[in-house]
Image (tube, rainbow, N blue to C red; front, side, top):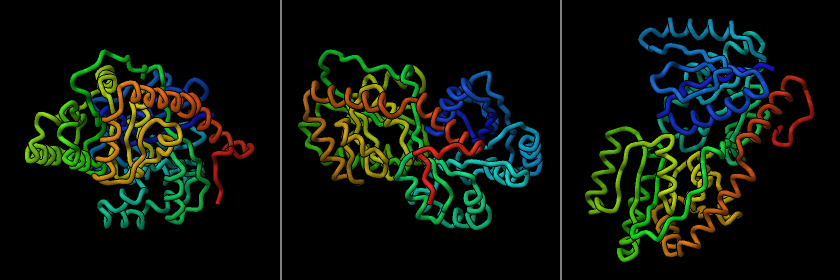
Length: 379
């Protein structure tokens, strides 16, 4: 079995989808042949040398040459199934178009790009793209892959009747050791680590902070770690300055590798106040490091409640302020136990080995008509 994945970027700054894709391919190559087609970047994430990696040289002023390059790649690469990751990007559209031409099965993973919040951003452009090409690409996919039941339900609401496979993202636990419990700290840390983008609800975190009693805030600080549009980040800095939070809230550069793990280990709480998330890799990473998590119902993490691993709250500053206050008032020991519960949750449900096995099972079902996996839903 030979599978070709397609994604627009595996750059280190591309976010959680690229990180997941790297982990998945590096794990699957131990059992099947895997290829990857992506756009050339200066800072690619490392992929296993056994993976057949093909770079397209994106240059929109020379779109025809770019199109021909991708066309040649997809026509000539040997594979049994194409698997496109993400929507609205030209490489995935080109892959789907050629797969239909040569009668090759293909899977589409929207990775949250069909969520209501995402569709409402640049609404006219996306509706036009759906009408011209994207709806056809999705509707003709052999299977759609969703990372949660919540994402699958939102895809169904758009009218797609394809089989949907619900397979979460996964983690390599060896890369995320449990944080060591240090001596009592004078200042504890609330960490936001993600792409700094309006969808992540960073403004809600700052507003919620203003609603927490100053006597409680005195022993805490917030670290906002990530990259994003500089104009937007400057607006956040102005809000922090306007609220006189310069000593309490810091915006820091993105962290990768060991620096990222250190950031998780230094945190006493992890917060993702997102408006919409199809999965939330950073939530899984924080839980793997045994850090208690607060996130919203815009992300599919109800298990935070069922496994006593954190807080799963309504979207908004007031619910966030309430959850923060509750978490900050706990003892270090109580937060430690909640964090350890989170680690157990990741060990149980989100190991990359298990995720890769399910993905391979999906491919086998498509190719060899084996018994339908229980995680595949047919309308």
